[in-house]
Image 1: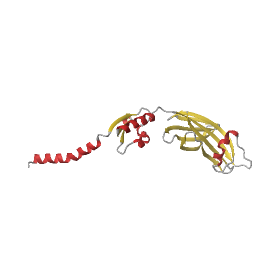
Image 2: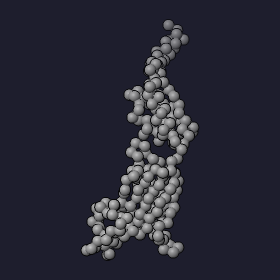
Image 3: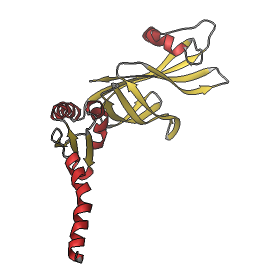
Image 4: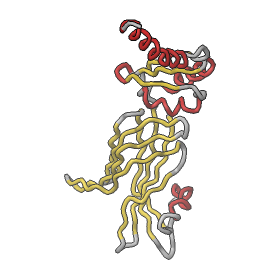
Length: 224
């Protein structure tokens, strides 16, 4: 056998396994479809797609064009297309209702009428039983928008995140509450948090052990 014929046999033997793998990857019952997202980041669509894939389904992300390349059965691709259409929406507007409440312990507790509905929730935090509203605000913004608002000697700033359609929660990124004294701005609370739409959340912002008082935040997020 000549060297040329030996080389040809080796090439055929080495190429055969790759041809089989290529056939598996392009199985007749699988299709490939590209989806270019206009409003949301393509890599964040994974949370929407994951429950919809078959056992052989997969996808890749092309960041430069914000495109998803999806491989799956034809029926699954139809469901994925609908899910992505509902996911890739323009930024939606939300409302954040925020109350600042001074909580304390008192022998004869006093609860204002507009705080009675949330008094039970507030009482569960550090066992306070008296509440006084310092101020409140209603901030409106779309997904991705920064918000800066003043509340009677305080300043709240944050950025609306994206709505998680699975858990119906909106993220408040880099939330910061500060006390404003003239030109001085004193940070009181820094955090990021997820708020389930329509659910009231109470947070402790600061506590003064000497006076048995604490500043509380009461937050509710809603879709506008």
